[in-house]
Length: 275
Image 1 (tube, helix red, strand yellow):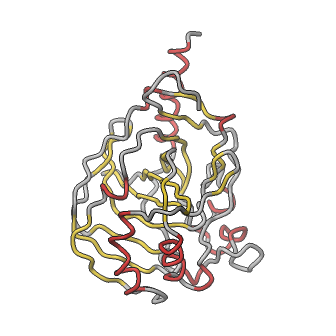
Image 2 (image 1 turned 90 degrees about the vertical axis):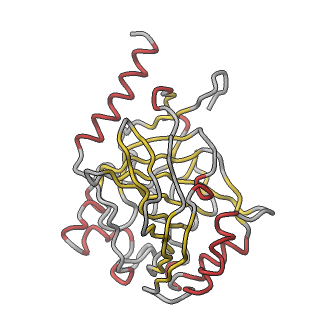
Image 3 (image 1 turned 45 degrees about the vertical axis):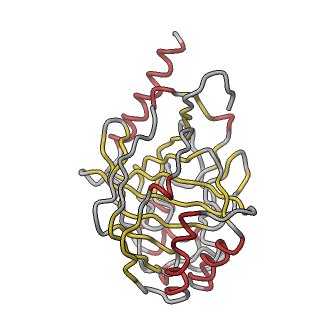
């Protein structure tokens, strides 16, 4: 079988997988007191699937997130194409959900096209340390840009960060609001017009796989797109995000889940460069 045909079949397989799973809604639980990130606790991540019947996927799902993105599993699929987006500045609110800090777009913040479907940007939030790892390496922070299609399917763009000498420009604009809602669970504040293009950046190489929400109810059928270029966040900004959430949620990364033979694809527009 020709190499080109193999790539086409892999891309088609991802599309079929997305269609086979029920629509994953962008509705993570907002009640942080119902679960914990501390392994070994009664409400810790290993018990999420037992807390409520509707959270069963957290314990029994076969396509859960996050996972380790190992280069040994990655297949180059150029047909995935660029993550073409039409993001725009929109009215937004910042919400302290206890387990994380979320920026919710109240207006039309634009969309990204994946497999010919428009996924509209609904919200973004941060996890520290990163939830996904790359070849076993865990980074200092991960940003999730959560999108929803007209049929309520979910796609997430994930961006990884490491602590460095330079701060993150998007977070720099959010710092006054982070201080405003720090350690005040369920606190919500209007932040005016926010441009998500500053959060997304311009990097084009990304990895894709089918997974789930990383907080209860852990719904599957989520199209994950992890940008390969690692960005920089200052130590001050990372500490500000951690201190803003509930004391027990400063480390709000779900443990890695089993890959279970899932396909992991990479899009790279430039030939001659190995993974």
